[in-house]
Image (cartoon, rainbow, N blue to C red; front, side):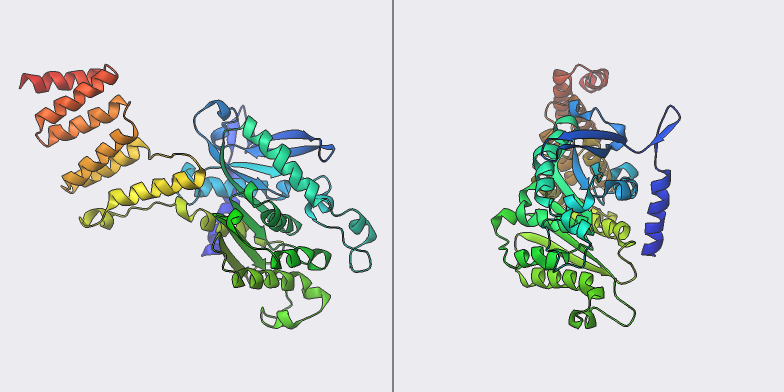
Length: 410
């Protein structure tokens, strides 16, 4: 079933478009001149609803930074769109997606330069490696500030990388944890340079600077048929070095208390190194944004003992904490819950939700009219008049005026 769901997402990626003047597009190209890397870096940008001038508007979005952008941009854009409120879902928020295209992949995505003697790599690859520190500096000091200045961004950021990109994700988490809120390492090349970064991780104390960070580690099945995850740990051949290094990383991470890092590893026995990115990204988004999902079922509403109002308040408090700014529920969402309570004759709870809208939006005339309507249905003329007057005081409107005329004639 899950494979079918992922297949659907792939098909959706190919069909999800924003149509403008007969052009089909899911994003735009942009570029930044990097002084740190001494080159022009191309990036692919997706902004929800094509809102590329949104920096001047109130709506802001979290940002997902994607390594090997040209390889994964299309699938991740489609997946995010399908799982977000754009399609009526709350698996993850709508996000700006920044696909970072490669110029010199080996240079940028390797943190160290291995010695030729200890490496199975070609001389060219060895000599061309080890530029990871400069690349992370480019992301920190040039790319992120550029995106934040040009697009309508939240402070919440996700970093996703596959293979050597996964190695870069882990390297960034260890040395620059403050850059991102969530890290997704998909089948990372932890074997690089005789497991140099892995040794660093073994000596890393995941203290307060890693507070509230999330890490999703995806492991592909790169073993021969006669191997399994238990047998492979005892193997010493070159052929299994990739998965052995990742399993060793997991062993290190699960031994740590990791009180500050929310960590999950998932092994994909039916996926190879090449096929894993799509399904792993899907699972990672579900894991990272577990706090984003708010489902209030009908049976919760029907049980008068349930504190639905408390649940909603706690949800938005958590959302505000994660995104680093106050986030309030939409008026129509709270109003809808209130009306559902009214249908079930739970009038006290309905009133509480309508009053929550007034607490959140005290300068909006509409919320007072809505509460006025509620008091009309309850036969409380005094409170109805009081709220319609407040509505008119904020903004003179025909509806509140007509309701006042009707009520005051009685």
